[in-house]
Length: 398
Image 1: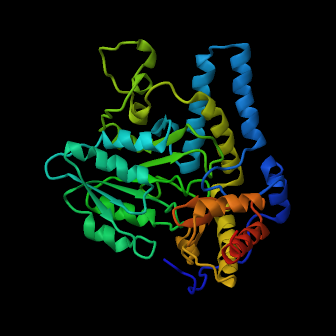
Image 2: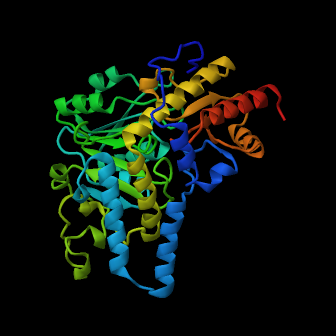
Image 3: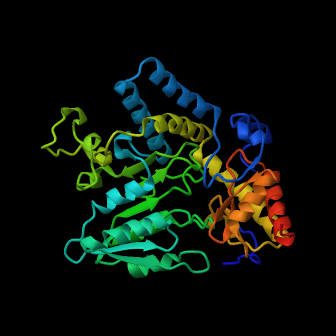
C-alpha cells in the first residue's frame, strides 16, 4: 500500500479558486483562524451560516414551541438542496439519522428471490456497510467481498463477480482510510449490463467530488452530512431512482414513510410514492437546519469547482509527502484520489492525532494511518505544515 515512489500523475496547473476568493470564504468558518483544520473527512468545520440556521430553529422553539409546518418545510428544503447537489429530483430523496440506518433500510428492501442471493461489496467499505449486509444473511443472502489490492479495488473484479446470482452491488465511492476513488460510472455500467442495481456510499466523496446520479446512472446513493457537506451528526440522505423506488417495500418504515403521515392509521401500511417511502419516524429537524445551510455553501461554490480545487491541494500534499519521504498510503494518480492523504504509522494513530492537536493541527486517525483531508477553503501551506508536523513526530517521538 506504499505508493511513495510513484510519481504524481494528472497534475493541475492552477487552482480554480483565487487566493482572494479562498481568503473571503475562510471568514465563514471561525475555527480556521484558530487551528490548521485538516479533518474534513471526519467532521467539517462549523460555518457562520450553519450556526445562524441552528439558532433560527432554537429561536422558533423558544418563541413558538411546537411548529410542525416550520419543521417539515425545513426538512423538505434540505432534501431539495441535497437533490440539487447530486442532480436528482427532491421527490427522489429520503432522510434518516445515519448511513447505518439507510443501509439497513435498503437491505430490508432487497430480500433474496430465486437464484438472486449475492450481495457484492468490497473490503474498502466503512465497517457499517459490511456489518449490515452480514446481519441480513439470516434472510438468505450471501455477502461476497472484493478484496483490496495495494489499497485499491480492481475494476476487473466487478466484471468477474457481478453475475446472474447478484441481487445488489454495494460500493463506496471513496475509501475512507486512504482516499482511493472508484470509477462509479464504470461500475454502474457493469452492474446494469447484468441487470443489477448499484448502491453507492458517497460519504467520503460528496462535497469534494461532483456527482450527477442521472449521468452516472447511479440507482441509489447515500451520504451523511457531517463531513464535506459541512453539516452536523444525526442526518443522512438517501437517493433512490424514482422508477426503482416504486418497486421496493422497505421493512424499516414509519409514519413519515406513508402516503399521508397525518392519517394516524396504525392498521394500514400505505407507502408514500417514490423515495419518500424510505423516510421513517420524526425527521431530525434540528440537524436539517444546519445541514441545509452547509449544502448551500457547497452548491454556491460549485461541486465541480471544489473538485478541481481539491485536485490542486492533493497535488501539493502528495508532492510534499514524497519530498519528506513519508510512507504514503494514498494513490498518487489524482484521477483515483479523493480528498484524503493518508500516512502509514508504526505507532498509535490516535496518539499522533492528539500530538498534532497540541501543535494546532486537527487531523483524523483511522486504523494504522493518520489522515489529512482539506476542503476548498484549505491553504496549500496548511497541508505542507501538517505533513511536516507528521514527519517531525515520526522522527522525534514524544
